[in-house]
Image (cartoon, rainbow, N blue to C red; front, top):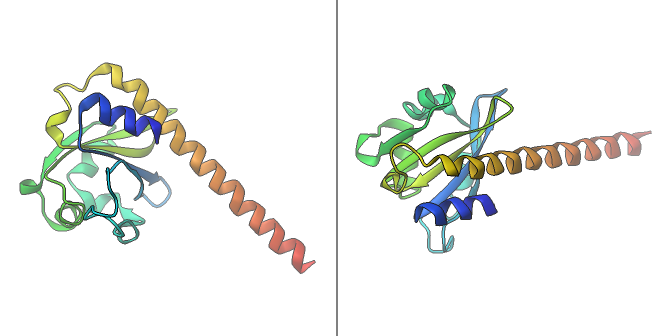
Length: 159
């Protein structure tokens, strides 16, 4: 989360969000958002609606991200499920890039508005993206360990 705030401050962006990517199901789930005030944000409470969203539903962002490329999109250019996402989260324009660790996409980072990110994206920010990717992997590892411990505890109770 600190990396998200650093990216937001670096670009002077309104919001930076991290989405977890599940490679097995090819779905994304909102993970972290730097909105200044979640209570007043239109996105408050909407995260659960977007859990396990098939990345394919977010075309054309999907095409760029699966090829480990960044994409820019304005609300006016969206349709279908992607248009719903822009409406739900009150997005005018977005820059979206893959979070890659060890050659594998582990998540997405979005920066709003898209205009905050220069063309091409500042290379100095790559280390911030790597930090965000690493944080996301640690989160997943902690969650998997907690699930394994619960499973083992349930087996132990049955014995």
